[in-house]
Length: 583
Image (cartoon, rainbow, N blue to C red):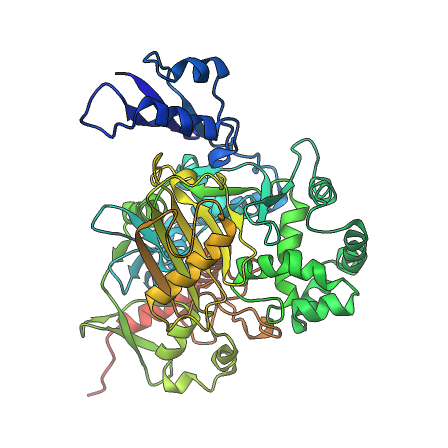
């Protein structure tokens, strides 16, 4: 077999997935002539194709035209080594909390804990309660695990997801979870960079590269100072001066900024508006799917603190496949191995109360009743508010939830008829008015890898004005934006790259909208109702609305239940005792 094009994807563990582009020795495969192949390779030569250097020897190019003696060519997309996270303070704190569940005294009688919602918060709650020796029963309304990281397989066997999910080095509880499950190798780490599209220079990108030789925050400062395409030196200086109070004031200062939007804070600190336009519009949409004139500045400062104070905090990894199978199922397997249960298609309909206002039982959508010693709701906050019994709604703890509202977001997947060259093996900030971030998943993700065609996954945000529009309108708008990002390869009318298919996933209420003055409304995991708890990224924890926040909320919920064991066990015993009757 004569091969003139070979692409390979090398995973973290060294396994190589190879696809051959052309075979000129048989008519059973796609068989462009050798001159056509030569022209394609000449055009790719020494280009940044798929984020890697593609090198072709000039001697081969000279003699291949009109000849049959060809050699294999490989485009290798190699994952970077897993960063050293284990010695960071946050990682050690997360590991200590995880270990506390495994080392705590075994309960005399395990509690039966009913948890509604099998997103990351519910899965995390169940996992750590099972580690502590209890019996969680996890209920999921849909037929798929993951909540906001859910994904589905289409009739062609391709996956499409609820969102484009990135795993940061600054996610200590998530990173610990991967290690506890023995699946660290499922994270595909990318180079330590942040890459932004340049709207004024279509087809070009600007990079913030974090040098490995420098510690934090010097590596972040170096990355900012070295980038002269997005901010001028005077703008960098003014921005740095504006950040000085945050650096000097610490956590107290950060918390005090919850009452200001990003735009208001920038103006108050004298930071040029262009800093927001160039950097913080993209960052705001990536963090919470809204613009700087709505987002609380506290959210930005928390992110900057996490990313800049840890050497590998802003380093990114992609999961090597679909989240339900590659992340959620290992958690389910762990829960079930310890005696817990996970039930799909089990939608919580109502919460029935005892006369004292505590939970009597849960009623499911099919009419079945489920009773436990403890109850946890790990659904999004908007669903929780619909489930709250009328008797609870006037309680301050629950009443404050009204200010917490999920933000709409749309995830777009487009399969093209060709491999796009103007992309990277990385997350890309589009800096588009309609798009937030995107990635060519046919390059960045091992399970989705395809050497011949690109699949772009894009976050369409802000989406409030688009969530009710048709899929075709959303695709048309997306293609118009992509034509600016890929001017040589994509045209809005598909006269260049053509769409083979697409999937659009709309989430009318996603993570809670982090607008000013939300922080006091976020509830603790322990509610004022005995035996009733909450988990979810909207609950009180330091990582806001994120996968890390969801996992940490589950750990904190499990911790509260373990701490309350004596009280909860006593309540369970009283419930089981038959009532005495006087004759």
